[in-house]
Length: 141
Image 1 (cartoon, helix red, strand yellow):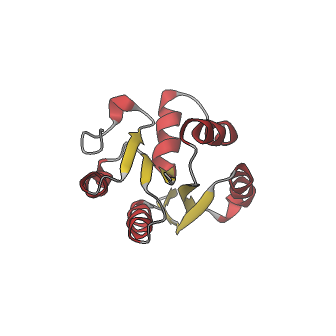
Image 2 (tube, helix red, strand yellow):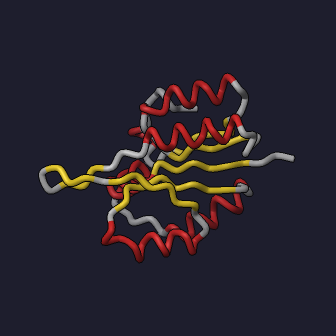
């Protein structure tokens, strides 16, 4: 039985869509992922901004498992990079056999080492980059 988990770099997805000029309909995106890949679990890694509680509730109602990173404000900009959390969660799930295969939603080259690890262990089905033109060659598949 093939158990697929999907791991989404929320910031990369959001910024990629924004740069392409559109807003993500997270409910439709979740539905598309379910129909196309039939995943067991879809994780969304996202910075925690207390004022966005309603948005987080909406995401959970859509079926995402949210993994938060505490954010800080630097010169008026919110910072909360979730890369380490995504890598740690994915590798932990690999070792506990929480999936037989996974999909990453990111174009961020910082995940190159994770992609290599998953490829070497024949545990990655694909990478969905929000903007193929800006996808790092470190994560292209």
